[in-house]
Length: 348
Image (cartoon, rainbow, N blue to C red):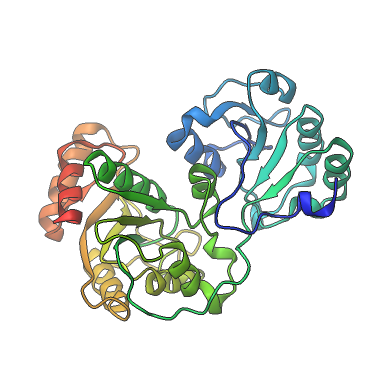
């Protein structure tokens, strides 16, 4: 196997072997399984089973299989579906990943660490003729943003914080647009979205000067009736990640914003000294910044993550917040009339 075969693919489209065995590592809490949860919820037909380190307790509720069993069941790649501190590939995972290579599976990773930089993985992949595929690598030759208006329509999900539903909202809206007979594409900007869609640009791995240009490339000129529904990243209110959020906001040139918020969260995740903005402040600042590249942008409504609430409480909360915020409000994962009203507002 030559080096090119284990280098990260550099185009927007990724040649990902499917379906997947989801590797959960040594996680004891499903909160660390963001990639696995996204694949399970949005690409269930691609998920054959789960596999984890001995003694680990976290689960996605999929059948538990060793790599050789999963290969016989149809899996063709092991996906690293667990997050670690700093996006690292933990040394304890390596023997389990090597077992997957020996079973005939390629390896797909969205970690910041590169698979081929781990000598044992590189040696095993070369010996066995298997692929090591890193999706958290941007394509080469990304341009500086031009700010030139582009044909077609664009919707971008933005958030009051990180990890509250921007990807799920974008996927749900793209599916709803298609269900109404519209030409719509989900545009992935993170590793999990790329694994679901098979294409995209990992915005958080792009050099800062080129983030807006990457967003322009991700959603190019299109037919006037075509919608690109773009997965947001981070938050312009997050002291750590506002830069990538702003570059994506400017480069996307969205016609529509949908603001995502998590019920019950009042402080920035991981930075408790920072209070979340009010919904009014979040809408106003997001629109003011977005108008730099699209003066006609508007906010269609709020995607409210009500996970953990009983259905009746969630329904009452959504109605109350819609009146309070004077915007359509819905939890896309619950669907129903509230979500249809949000879709109407996006298209209206």
